[in-house]
Length: 113
Image 1 (cartoon, rainbow, N blue to C red):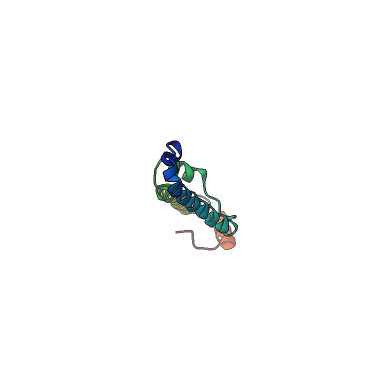
Image 2 (cartoon, rainbow, N blue to C red):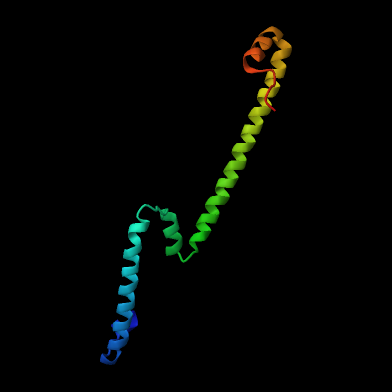
């Protein structure tokens, strides 16, 4: 459409009208959908991907990969803390048997696995 407008010839009026009508129809379709989609939030980074000519699905993929990596990192920390707690209870049981008997009576006999 930019070419038609910048080098306008009266003979191209019909083509310009068709393109304008097509754009108007597209904008009307967007306006109809707007009410259904008004609560959907799209991260600005997704729009930046589009502006850079990149596929916005790559943004989603990268977010999921980062979340997975963070999840694995947190799981590793949880596993380490669980093992530490088990080892600590075991060692405290050797050093403070009476106190640990009371502790186990309150918290249960089974240390976490």
